[in-house]
Image 1 (tube, helix red, strand yellow):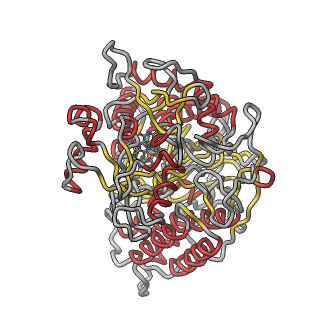
Image 2 (cartoon, helix red, strand yellow):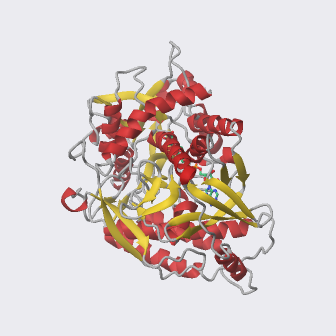
Image 3 (cartoon, rainbow, N blue to C red):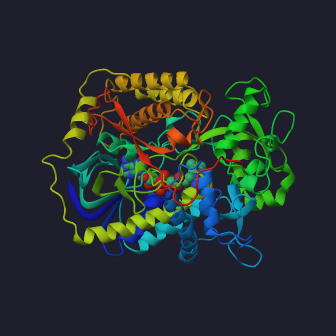
Length: 586
Ligand SMILES: Cc1cc2nc3c(=O)[nH]c(=O)nc-3n(C[C@H](O)[C@H](O)[C@H](O)COP(=O)(O)OP(=O)(O)OC[C@H]3O[C@@H](n4cnc5c(N)ncnc54)[C@H](O)[C@@H]3O)c2cc1C
């Protein structure tokens, strides 16, 4: 079945919905989503959205932009960070006017709290910048935007899995999707396609990310020959629930929560004397791993899966119940611990991809040399880049709202004069060939163990601390798994809701992205932001102040899956036109 639209948005999280809302004002727009929209991971965001409203402390967008650049260890494109910070203020008020129920100050203003790396006057002291709706900020954003889209008659195709992109040279023609309910293939022909497919934390064993966060957009585009940017920078959030990775928002530390080691010591004072527990995430995660390696984890066994305590007991029950009610619920449900009475056992958890599909500030996909006409990306799957080597908490929700909207506006402009591209003869051929092979009656391995091995090697070898030997091991392991992937076969061959097939499609994307991540990480011989190498402990601006572009040398655009496909690396300049890079101290 072929559908025709001016624009197709792949993904119904915050970025996709905002883009759809804008583009649909003048264009015919469809949103294609593998999940029912309100199940998108944006709904899990807890702590808040950063904007220099200055409701409780003096604040300015320039300070927000500076913190973003410094927090990103100077790999951030600085003019893009200025746009992010300046537009954040408008974006938050716009959400408020759409009906988002923010928490309030006593005077009825939008309440704000502290978050890691957000400071007053270029680093002097912490500032209250994060706007929040208790610890359900993302949920409220998602619901608000979805309601607005419904009001504006955006057409939704829910539970449709995008499996391929159709290009005419470097111009977009459409996408190939699988309707999960029927197993039917639908082609969407469009002048513009925006990928807003979210993150890919599922490549790691311990992660805060939902099961569906498998990097489908970047996976599909990488196989089509589009390079991905800065993939070595993957953020580990310092406070995941022990063993499970479920996130405990930085908002807990924003409200005054304190990290403690096995002697009860608030150890962050030794690592970040000014910002303490509210230093940026990369630094706090490293501090926890360093404490553990020194035998100061709670078990004291120096193993990677040891942990520390996040103590909120001194905040009082009233604050815990009012400001972090969902967190309190998670802890009671999963740990049998009441955070108002006992400290929470935490360890770093894979949380956020700084890297992804390279775009300009209007969401247009470009590696700086080639512009893929009509192709857009926004949200976590994109790399503008406003997060550089390490994202500050609350800046992802801003990124969705600011750059999702800008992409939507640019799409509306672009489709007015653009023409539909010709569709290839049988655009779905590659996918049907792949599905036929999976059901050819031969016996093959099950994807489960491959998935587990990938997550284990990525966690152990491309985690918080990295070395050449570890990363080489990861590259080897993942390459091995990509070979085994080619042998997979489906046990369940039915068409309706075939979750086995969905699992294989998702695994393919994760394997390709793990491979690109490990190769990019091995290549970068310095420590910067979330990429921390024991064998190259210093930041090296002389050689490495540049973005990585890593792409398949022999694009395969398909599920044909040549595991041999090698990754080639190029570089792109970083925009440092506003602030000169300096060493980071907090
Ligand atoms: C637990 C948690 C808490 C967080 N808290 C905060 C916070 O407080 N503040 C903050 O700034 N950031 C936070 N983040 C980060 C932030 O929430 C995410 O980066 C952001 O919500 C991602 O939004 P998105 O629109 O890019 O993608 P998502 O919201 O993940 O949506 C992705 C969409 O793409 C669709 N999709 C994916 N693959 C396909 C496919 N193949 N075909 C069709 N559709 C597809 C999905 O159906 C979904 O609708 C948090 C993240 C997590 C995991």
